[in-house]
Length: 140
Image (cartoon, rainbow, N blue to C red; front, side):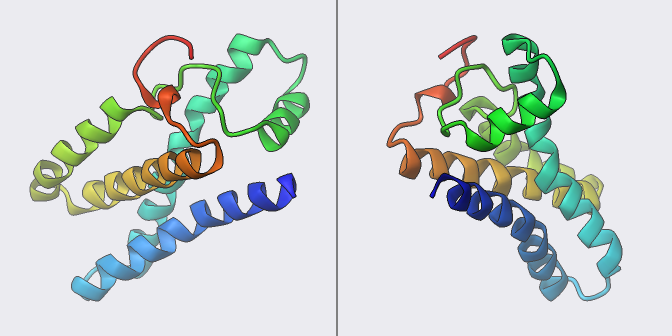
């Protein structure tokens, strides 16, 4: 059952760029679909780079053991993740309208980034029933 939840969670992260791209292209038909898709894909996957902090803090012997931990561990984050917190969500919500006036592709990137964080937040609320780890602090 744990693998199915993991697969559903990761599948949803892969669906984010397609949903964001489709929505943006629906309202802005003049944009290049490949560029929009690539930017949305990068924005949807980049937030998880902060999981490398778990690797650093827990001092895994190799990357394979770290990946296995990430796949089989519960959703409760025992380590501070720089992007997975409320402060980042607030900054993105405020930043997206301003960035969209300067560079529309950057706003697509940030929108995908924000959608990823929203998905993770709601997944944590549903899966573990709480989201204290989303507060900005060193450890939870």
